[in-house]
Length: 579
Image (cartoon, rainbow, N blue to C red; front, side):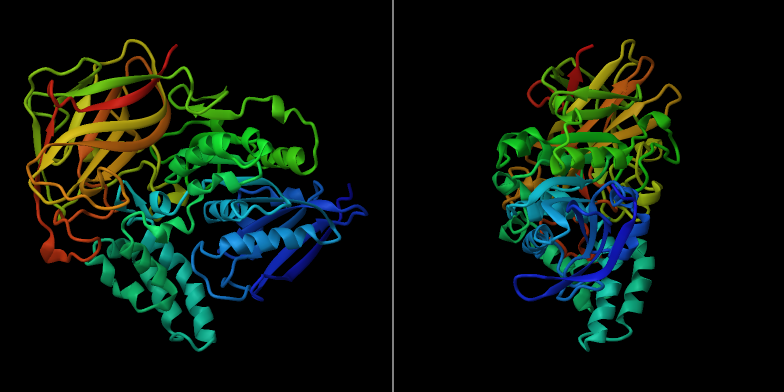
């Protein structure tokens, strides 16, 4: 294959409604047509050509592929108006089919990219384009509601104003050029972006003036107005349409990626529900000790996984495309489809399925004598008897902060606000219950989905329950592994709120998503329980009012009670792997 590359800039690609989207195309100077790899981005096709380490496009053109970077509708060089995700299905379909018809393309098209670019792939795939042959969705959700907007009914505050302000200045400049916005608006939004940490504290959420005055950020307020999983979210929900996806996918995420839930769901359900045999059998899953963005290495400010977790993702993606777009029998079909990084032992392992078939789901129970604050509680596989409940005061005016974990806060790309941070600074707070096992004498591997059932009551009409799983090291460091949240009124499903009665005990099942970690001898297993994870999630004001309407004067404290006795055995379910 020739290494000479031809580059065409701002190639117009027409959509079915006449809107023209622009793309840059790099392809080998070859006599024969080649497959195409498409990335559709809201962040500028020029930016991703040079800086996105998740994608192999620098090498793909010289490896025999036409590489296509496209600005999505309404962004940078492309026509139309931008609204997150809603156009990516039909526009992705039209772009794939246009590429397949070009004389330099052999009618086989793949897609690649991470985060927004990953979900854009799935949205195109559910439109069932005939010439889409492979996907590489990285760090991608499976839907918008239980994905980038909400989790367990709680609003993902850390991500959404931050992301809205990140993308809106370019949209505001575009609207100003069209006479549809104030020429000064882009600068105002840029200033707000630099002060987003202060905005997290502002109430009510429905009247943030920095966002509310701009047509470029209207989608933020629509997301807040749809706090339940309704038809608004169904428009872009991949997990309701897997049977329409005909292409195999290489799914990649990290244990500290806020979109881990979506990647795992996409993989597991596509294996069962994909719309073709090649789509079902061709699903691959790769999960490492990584956050949402940045280079694929395991170096965090407080902990290093070392060089063992580094992978050649560019090479793996090209190998995947070689198999499914070029038909090369490169042995990929004979390899196990799942590869996960086992933290603690810090090794990779290949598996036949996810979750692992040999998993022993083991209940570890919360215990205390009513003194779990300040690390006074214990955790063990022994069921509780008659035990005093634990009580704490949750005050939304002083919420428990998030420290590390699977965050999508400003700075996640540089890992300052994500990963295995030490929780000791928050575990001393009076609004955090801490339950810790005895020192382990044998290794305990926990690999798979995580959930915790709390039998709890609150004095308020509504509240939140937050659970964190930590690995306590011999030096006392309490390294967070996973976190989950559940808004009380969504305890029976996020399709509609179901009010609670104050002081009544309910079982609350909190989804902590998943992890893979070996708790080594000398370590301890720990579960923290609290009622906020700020600013990752919005503060529950404890009023039961619709999301975003409460102001500072509406915030009310709530007395929280967690039960762990014979009739109300609060517990975490650990997916233990036999050794």
